[in-house]
Length: 347
Image 1 (cartoon, rainbow, N blue to C red):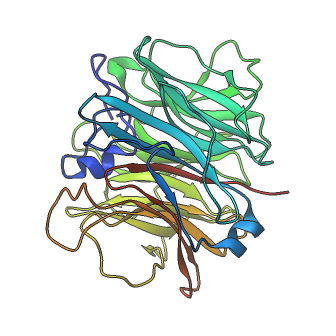
Image 2 (cartoon, helix red, strand yellow; image 1 turned 180 degrees about the horizontal axis):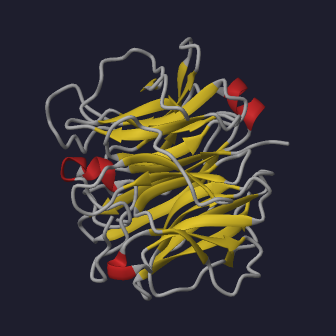
């Protein structure tokens, strides 16, 4: 994964805007015409998965819209509870992304792109959006935070490496580290910290023709192994609460696909959705419920062969692992993007 100094951070929403071209992970701008309404271009579903949300807590997500007439861009963090109306947690002219709940569910880490500094940094706030503090402050880009199991450290992706290559760093979540520590020379586009062990899952995306896919990285030994059996492009990662499986977004020639895989590479399969016809752009950003009975994911597509169906709304959905339910939680206005998803653990 390469980041040029003259370009904006690549980030996950670009995977559906130009997935055919495998656009940059850190992109936080460039979009499609979509005026944002007062709610950020979001319509709450009339039939959210109330029981699932009540049992598992809040789902944080990022909604992004762009008004081409004024070039106004909006990308903020929201949370939805009990299938009710979305709550906006950030409301700034900057662009936020990558929300990640702390292990105790009390805080959210996220990254924020600041136009005035032309870079992104990591921030932390309370679950209600209060007590905001900045965790990193660097002229390069820092994105994609993920918490250690005890909540004391945060791993993130930074392009402060040679030639703007994206490496993995860790930092104390209380801000006591004077400098983040690089933990690997792997070039990655996504990462997630195991909820049970000092192990990272990373989506490796090296320059050239080297192998791409999911690897584990043991922070105690520096060793790891491949999870995906063959080379493939991966856009997002999330651990099962039990630490023995992953969900991920796989890039395909036509549309993305939300999938599940065990750490040994077995049982690699699609997320059990409702069986609806596969849309042009598929399913993506799958994230486990804390009780492991359900998976939240985004869906976006159309009924025709239009490779860029921008007028089709994104939906945040929750599917049960037994395949019996697949409920709409939030529907975005047409043209708005659903960028990232993170599910809160209630203790």
